[in-house]
Length: 347
Image (cartoon, rainbow, N blue to C red; front, top):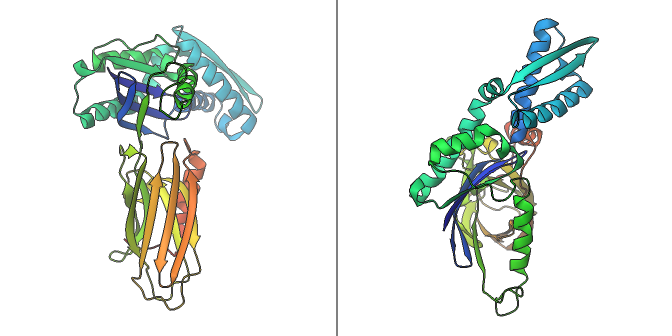
């Protein structure tokens, strides 16, 4: 069968299109948004409550106080869950001696978060378009992640796909069930047969986002993302590319790995960085640096840099993270923006 998995968790969103043939599980296309999750729905409720508070008590923004903000987020998460079952709920806030209550209906909540849901709809459409499939060719639409309990999610998917999402397994428990099943798959003997069933099982995965390297162009002089492994490449995958030093006598090279499709590295997700040093003294500008890289199914990335004059090898392993906190992404972008004399390599 052909299956679409719509996974909206607390901090990330992913859509995966898979083919299941006998006991072979093959990921065809996957896409998502590491900066979108149920927490964003919560934040909309928090902001809505804060605006109401400031309207009644000018200058008193409850988001400025960490304790009040934490309380609002807790209430917002509870309100989101309540609105999945009921048509309205109530929040209570207190800040700088001011107390108030906010009535919130499901319709208001859905209006506040309509653009967030639209982002997931667009991503879901793009996944099918990239695979060249139409919805009648999809056998099942599975929901994963607690945030898919929001009625707006199922309604949007019904309108988009023309089919009812499969709720045979609780979205909150789907990942745990999948992890247990995958553990069983991995318990194989040397013949590749499952110890539990005696039948061969094969899993083919792809990388959800492109793996890239931050490089510097000469004209114009700016940082850019050079793609090493395009997204939706079957894993494991290995390859190599040649890059070049940017200036004569460069003492070291800074290797920055990123995940994402944007040409601007500030808009990508940082995976890790390391230096190749020391370089041979007097190395001419434009000297070749060969990078060998491998991305395995577990998400581990291995990078080896080779300089041939004389031979110099540096190797690093990076475990891909599932998500990155927004503040860390902002810090990364700021570090790129403020760097005055980087040791990046050129494409």
